[in-house]
Every structure is written in C-alpha cells, then in structure tokens.
Length: 104
Image (tube, rainbow, N blue to C red; front, side, top):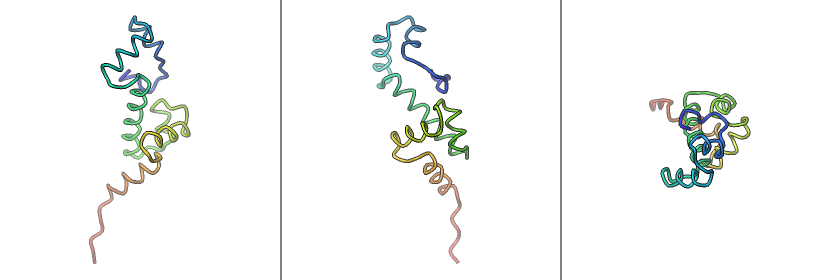
C-alpha cells in the first residue's frame, strides 16, 4: 500500500491478498496505524500531493500522479483534509520560498 498509493485499491482486495476477511483486515489495520485503510491511503496521497505541489507541479499533474480521479477530486479531498485548495497551498509554499526584498 505504501508504494501503490497512487493505484486504485480496495479493502476487499487488500484483505484477500493478506489472506484475511475484510472486517478482520480493517480491524487489524486500524489497530496498527490508528486509521481505517481508506483514511490512511488518502493521508498518504495528500502527503505526496503536498510534496509535488511544493515542487511546482500543477494540480492536474498532481491529481494524476497521486491516484485521484481528476483535479476536481484532488481539490475536494485536499480542501476537506487541509482546509485549503491545492492551488492555495502551492501559492503559500511559493511565497515562503521567495526571499524578502531588503528595505530601501
């Protein structure tokens, strides 16, 4: 799941691969990580999206690279999880990186 965060994943598929029932897999996963599998996956995707946005990637490219269906899906999820849009986050990062102009 760590490396495949950008791929479509389902809890039943993951449980089947682990040889566990869906309910047991979800319970063990939550016990180990503190999050439901889907919440953990979205958190990883948001972390990667932040890194790519900070590198100057466009929101559309970030959506494609991180497993979101499209830019709108990234924007909705990013805003719900962080309180700001991907574009606002990128502007904030860029503003922090700009050196301040010396006072004349």
